[in-house]
Length: 354
Image 1: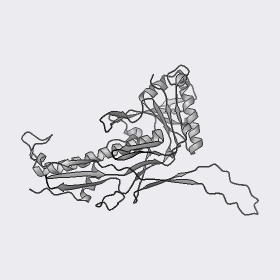
Image 2: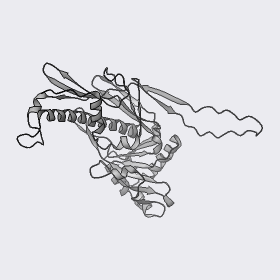
Image 3: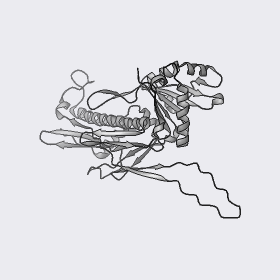
Image 4: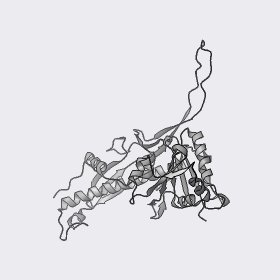
């Protein structure tokens, strides 16, 4: 019985139809995608300004205004290449889920093994994309390191004043802490730096508990000027459930719906190369974000002869090894998640946990 290799088109079809896990940071803030036909990813950082139009006499020519400047950065992204074996010996034994005695043919088991390999490779890549998106939004930069890859920090240039680390009496949960003032200050600064409002707070579980336990918050929320309700304009909140790592908690808003901020809590982990469980975001972090962040999913060209330097987010392939007889599957990607307007975000470290 022959077991034929899947064509590239067939493998791409498997990638397309394979369901993926929910990706809070990737889906919430990186709506656009650009595939680069070059090995390098290039992105522009536009310098915002608030110049007024100049006054002139109505009978003289208009004045030419200087163009808004921008800075172009280039980055050769790290490669990700999850790889699996399709062992021909496995197709002759009953697989998990089959009835006793086995109900599938070797060919069916072979096909199922190939599909599961490609699906698992896509899941690991999707988690990587979400991790990169999370680091870009939370920290304003991504630290990339790996086997045979020197550590590089891709800094998107967020203003350092948009990160506030609280210590001592200013920590949320302390008697004199002012969580609402912290949020107001950084929300105001983010608007000045980015020209776009902050309309969502993503809180770690511990930060959320300290925020809503604050007497200052309780007193203000009981007044007429600010209230919490459950109505959300975000499609993301409709996706939240007990199976997702995030939960929609409500809306903070002023009188007549002004100053509207949606509040989410987030608690998700991933497994690092050493097998350790790591939080995507600290439980004491508070991240403010707005629509102006304009995140872009960038993918460099695939450096593979079969791909022909195609612009693809994921390129799957499979091949045979004759001795010993074994088939491999592998999915390749060269990703970088880029927030076009990184100053439309801020981070508060609400407490050191003590």
